[in-house]
Image 1 (spheres, helix red, strand yellow):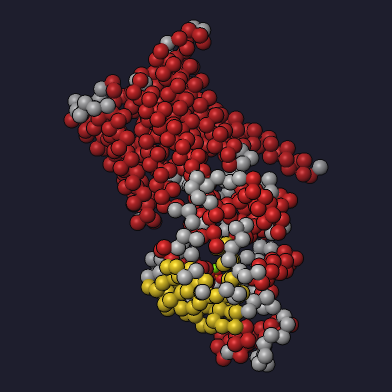
Image 2 (image 1 turned 60 degrees about the vertical axis):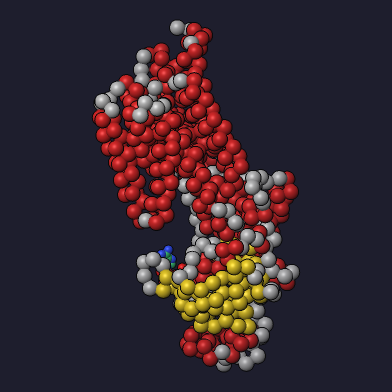
Length: 278
Length: 258
Ligand SMILES: Nc1ncnc2c1ncn2[C@@H]1O[C@H](COP(=O)(O)OP(=O)(O)OP(=O)(O)O)[C@@H](O)[C@H]1O
Ligand SMILES: [Mg+2]
């Protein structure tokens, strides 16, 4: 099949546009989450999303639209736990994850077991993106872009040096809450692309690759978005072509990009140091 | 007006015993205070209480006459944290790191303009780190990083400068010029509070001393410091040595300690 033929399907167009929007959103937010060591939160929230989706299925409401508030609420809960039980943050996150998964499984069982819908959230269903979901992805991307634009320097200061940021009048608690809430929404929407199992990979891998190469902070954010969008577009194409699960193909491409970046970094650093010795 | 007013500050970390007990003092315009005290005596903790980074269990802090919880004028303050090593994967250039010093002068959305870049460049030249402004912060040496963070602390032309062991990573040239620089800023009206272990370095620049050891052992002018019975008690056999330093530094101690 030619690329033109591939692009002519309406569902493919929706998948590509929604996928690209979500990829850019998770990658840009991921840079801040990874640097603030909050990427584990993305993982926990994706597990909570299962409960939200199951709740949506049992109430016959749209799963994504039910999951968004559920996951955002849990995000606030996690931040509370993190603030009050510093030492036990990891454990608390693990508990929230487990709670999310088990509650989700029980609700799903009550709803009559696993159906195709639930499976599409577990393993991703980018090729079945609805028009409403596409609009949600666009709204989310716009919101994330707005937040990053407005709070760019607050966020940068927060991840670079929290104490200094506070002494410079940055409301770090508010900034972190905004970051985590928009990420919570992004996690739910990204679930549609790669599935619950792989959402945290969308948050962690493209930023990690970008951070290996970037020469300044802005470029790190832009590079992460570029990598992530490429991986999603190529992933959807190859998945369709080879009849493979799109979510998994997307993540594999992301990992290949990461490996490529670390090779480049190794080469560049070698060159730099040898240039210094010369 | 007092620039810092601390009343009966008491603080304990969640883990255990009090780190600071019942600390009260004032810092006013024109003060250049050297804060001394052994490791673990609560110097850094006191700074964090002053800046609201920690909340005291008892007592109150006022900055520029305003209770800390209502204080908004952070652009009046420059702060250098002790041994600050941000996570090493953040791709911030030295310039971007230094420019954060202007964050407190901005309103949301905090977007830097050409003028901010000029101010940052000037601060970096003053701190002697402009040459490597485009290098990644985490690729700099400890002393180079310290200079960048110093540029960041001074970029907003603060009226209160708080430096927590600014000289530890600096070479002796940089150390001298740092203190000269602070003296200039102090002459121009900034209050300076410097934590240091090196009384020999700081002695000739400061006009006040503060000694901390969980309690406030001493706070007063350099002249009173030299004549205070606390000094002998506190520094014990090192007192004569100490006084030598202060004498070398310009003989400001009228009563001496010999
Ligand atoms: N984050 C923390 N958690 C628990 N205890 C702490 C913490 N930071 C400091 N302390 C304790 O509080 C006391 C005062 O520490 P502080 O860092 O204020 O000392 P300092 O005077 O700055 O020492 P130094 O000269 O080594 O910098 C010490 O006993 C220290 O062990
Ligand atoms: Mg200290």
